[in-house]
Length: 216
Image 1 (cartoon, rainbow, N blue to C red):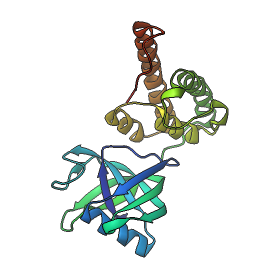
Image 2: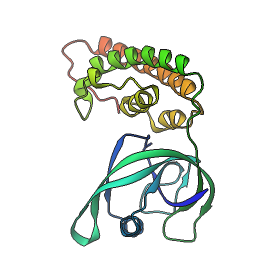
Image 3: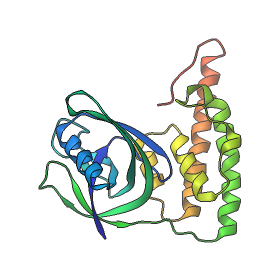
Image 4: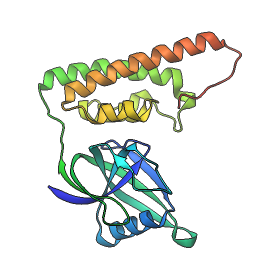
């Protein structure tokens, strides 16, 4: 068990993927300043109830992801832009609301490995779905992603796939909470099947001359 400051957001962070943030609220400037001074990471947690900013501290989901600060760019009036990377999952055991920002007593929540052969087989199958998805939506993603660069390691592929799919935050939280590698891959395949079907149906209804659309 260890203690970390928590940043409730309307987004889900996964291990091994980036997250860029603009820090403007006083409480989170204080929190990030403490992290930088002490070379500590913080936890990103999806908001279950409440607001992301300018209000009482939100109630988060219990499972989150540790974020390491890679770069901090100070701006005017104490604001800053930070680049972070997801490190590992954690589960909140207790919350401290006595400070300006949330502090959590947490424990590590690593994925259970399970059968390696089954994981690799399901990862190869998922990879085909991710490749199909990228071929449909590549023009709508914020960054160009080439399927040939997708990793083959099951866990790395799973978290990249979770990052890439344009799904609502609660659906991504369901992925983050998967207890095992195999179950995470299964949930991802189901989500990709649904998203691909939705994209194809939308494209069919729009026709070739109706312009692009956003999946967010």
